[in-house]
Image 1 (cartoon, one colour):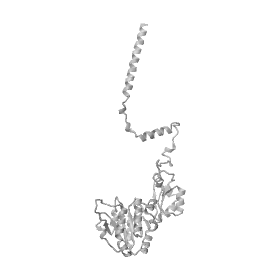
Image 2: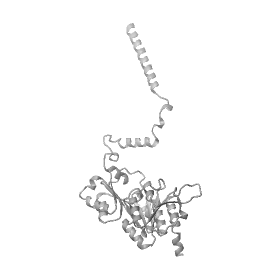
Image 3: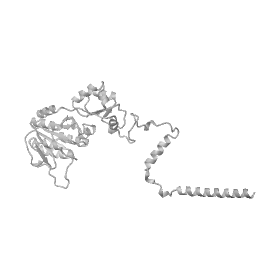
Length: 333
């Protein structure tokens, strides 16, 4: 009995040591609250993760189609979706084809290579391109981005809020309306508010037309039409493929090309010439491109007395138009 009780005593001591060491190990594994990386995930990310956990809690083997990135119809729209972003866009094969058949004015078309080469769209896209519409062949993901994840079926277009004319028609109409016509040309102005304001000023000061390049420029969208405040109904707009080639054609037709530049060598207040004019306005960030500068007959500047080194593009266009049309207003007064 004594040997048996001695063995039990040793067994109890051994188990007590094991329990104590286990508690020490567990205690060593615990970290203080300050040691946890609380900033590892933001509050929105923690809520997002918990949201996914709750959505699959009932059936963890079932995947939610809403978050299936491989699905072509995956809805990528932001939670706060502004319908105004898509007010000028039309997408889907049937909708786009219907617009093309009705020959509505169009700014540009985005489509995949499969759609462009398809039997249904090949010829009609070829016809609209010959009329000056910009057609961009882009991947599926790009159209999804443009349409905010809508079911676009590989094609989308942006409608225009004004009919456009060819450069030849613009020149002919301008010479018929005015003895000394003035045409305004926009070089790389992508802000629709600036384009709309420039069109409004151009019509108010008696310009006979606007030239806008197909690329690197805002089209005649709903925002442009709204800012123009009705001026688009009374002035011709031409969208050209090659801006500098168009300037060369204008020179051949007797126009003098003037470029507005901050570093221009001629002060606009002292500039006067009695020929048909083309005034080129560049973007606020880059101004006139180097090639456009070479195609200008004169580079003029607006004198500034303050510390502000430059003006908004639409403001600069309005000031230059007022200065260059002073003689016209003296004649009619």
